Image (cartoon, rainbow, N blue to C red; front, side, top):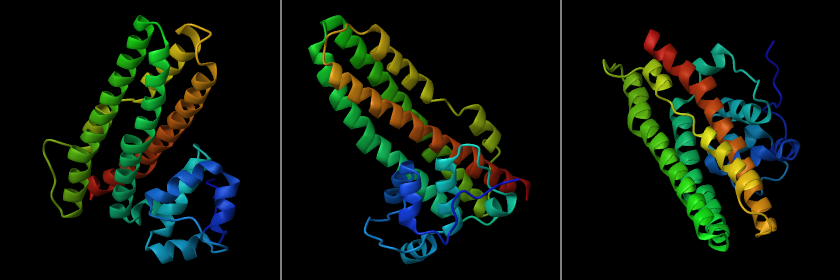
Length: 228
């Protein structure tokens, strides 16, 4: 049986303090800190956010085994979900990935040239993979969903095609962590390396939740649209 981890009548501050990862959700919905003792529902109403969608995402961030009901998925504000996913893409591309790149470049410059070049090239390859991944979603999947909402179906695209071509951008992050932990020369910027690893672990966990949102919310919703 599905169990709600958080509820809409909880104070939003309690939700954030119960699981620090949920703080990443707030700016993607446009929610600013300073909401006092307001409940989740009150804050969502204030910002014009679909409370059910907000709760599902909070619950997924707190428990990867959480599964929304078919009723919840059917009644979602899909435009809000797409806006949230676009905001997530913007956050990764404009904030987290450049932040990590800045520190990786500092580390690479302190390494022997061969090792530094390997590190830079590997991360550049990862960045290109992420950009292509998000572009595919925003240029192919999102317009397809918006077309379905208008009753327009494509013969060249489906949610099944998307899932078959949906690349895993987490594997390369795992490889990068292994390079930093196992294979770069020791004795060089140890504190910086540990800080970078913490950033990589946090990014990997966040992207994992992002993928769950697409797999457990967006894909089932699109399947329902296709079957109508």
